[in-house]
Length: 166
Image (cartoon, rainbow, N blue to C red; front, top):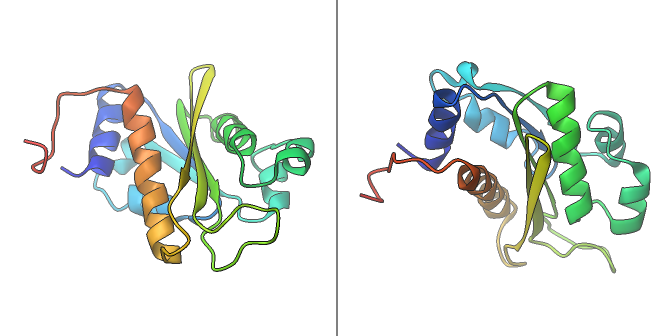
């Protein structure tokens, strides 16, 4: 069982629902979630908030946060996760925002800068990463999805190990 499948199974065992708010991954997390048989027991959906106005309109990220900290920031990732949790009516909501390249604007997030966040109960946790300016767009997006899964799994310890970990 891979880590993504483990997350879905763990949430199913706990009877928790999952949603996501995606920016740089553009729906890739949702596509992967729905590729697993039985995902519908857990996964309710995703908000694709690639554009700034969709972060504000769909995930209810306050414009002042984006203006003050920039789209690729811890406060925006947190707001995306908590706003998505409410909008999607889920128990657990993961979010991601970042720059997958190929360029960075001066004073803005560098290529490879990513924030992932998870909202659960009344708390939100966020981690920042720099996946490197030499990584391809797809590598950055894939690493972002892996980071989202690992952050969520850190909240729900379980005994099930995949073949690589045995």
